[in-house]
Amino acid sequence: MIRWNAELARRLACGDEEKRALGPLIRRFVELSRTTRREGYLALESELSGLDDPLFKVGLRLVAEGLSGEALEEILATYLLAADEKGWPFLRSCAIVDGLLSLAEGDEPALMVRKLVAYFGADRALAALQELEGSAS
Image 1 (tube, rainbow, N blue to C red):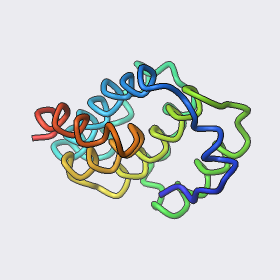
Image 2: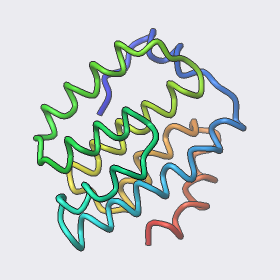
Image 3: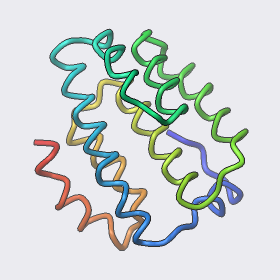
């Protein structure tokens, strides 16, 4: 889990419309979770070619290689801290990092969804959870 501070929180600020765009990303993580549960982590390597986001791609490769959760978190947190992003791009990157950490930990899809809907904010998290629950079951 990402260790938050005031600077990171400030960089996350974005609008509700942008936050709604997290739905497809969360669904993608649910699919990846199901794949690893059926086929194992090495199956994630076949997913790499379909990814455009460099952070997602490098993180998924590290998960597929079986990197420990602690080492993975350290590496991905460094990417976040070094990134010159804010607003929607930074929010998306943070959700990707937490999704990758959840995937590496072997979280069930329902738990993964619950972790990631927090990025919608407390006022929209429950509605987002109800909307996404069908994807995780």
